[in-house]
Every structure is written in C-alpha cells, then in structure tokens.
Image (cartoon, rainbow, N blue to C red; front, side, top):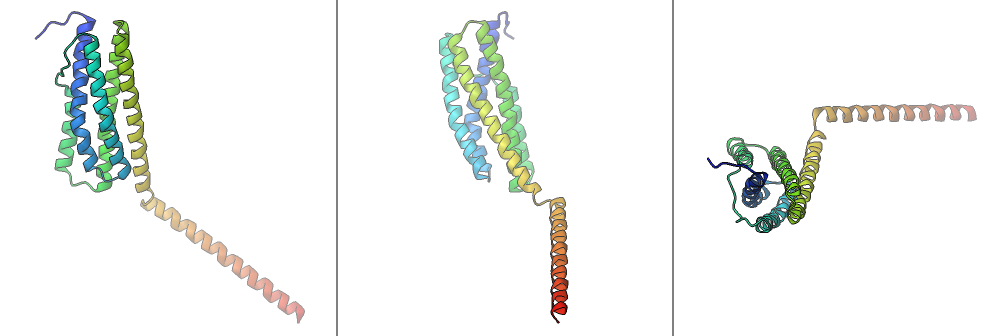
Length: 203
C-alpha cells in the first residue's frame, strides 16, 4: 500500500482512474453499437466511440503537462458497469426494444460516472494551478454531458413509442373512435329527419 500525502498525488491517482475508464470504453462502445437495433442509438454509440478516442488523447496531454507518464489504474466503477452489462446480455433473452432501453441505461450510468470524475478532476486541477489541464478536462466533460443528454433523449423516445401500443392507449383510442362514430350517426339521423320534414312541407 503506497502512502498518499498530497492533493497532487490524489489528482494523479484520479487521472489514472479516468484514463483506465476511457481506454475501457474505447473497446466497449463499438460493442454497444453492434448490439443496438435502434439506428439512432447505434450512431450515437459510434459517434461517442470516436469522441472517446479524442478524450484519451486529451488525458495523455494532461499527463504530459504535469510531468507524469500516461497510465491507467483499474477502475472498479467502470468495471462494475461493464460487468453488469455483460451479465444482463448473457443471461436475458431480451426483445430488441428492451435491449435497446437497457443499453441506454448502461451508457447513462457510465456517463454519470465520468461526469462526476471529470468534475472532481477539474476542481483539483484548478486548486493546483494546472490551467492547461483544466481546459483539456473541461473539453472532455462537455462531451460526456452531451453524450448523456443524447442517450437519455433516445431512451425517452423508445419508451414513448412502446407506450403508444399499450392496452390503456388502445382502450383510449377505441373509446375515442366509438365516440366519434356515435356523433357521426347522430348527425346523419338529424340530417335525415330535416330532409323528411322539408319534403312533407313541399307536399
């Protein structure tokens, strides 16, 4: 067990942690893209995989700017999210829609983790006076927030589309249909009576 005595040591440790997480996600995101059946979700994973490669490069620049070698340390947080994903996909025969919703949830959990990690790193970089590091970390943080917003929007759309075919929705639609039909029948009956009255009047 190594002794940690300064905020800078903690900063380096957390930097190694998120570096490991990003390197892991460069391998995981292409897998998520291949597993997704929703086209927009597939494109979102593919796009973020490319962004993640750039984020890894940004982190390597941070390591260089503080005079440290770029290396990762095992990250229990991201490993746990990956393990949860792997076990679900292996153990459950989910329908395409359910699988897509699960994938958006897995992605959202990873993004929340990374957002928290980058927020903490930025605070420490500011306190240590590492301005160049702050800018690079902020660029990564913005991309993570955008990625989270994107998968949450896709998840809501998928869930909304499935709710559109729910029994309650079908029942409401059927009721509206019966009501409309009843009004149309009433209008036809009224028109028929009016026509009959005009005919008798002319006679």
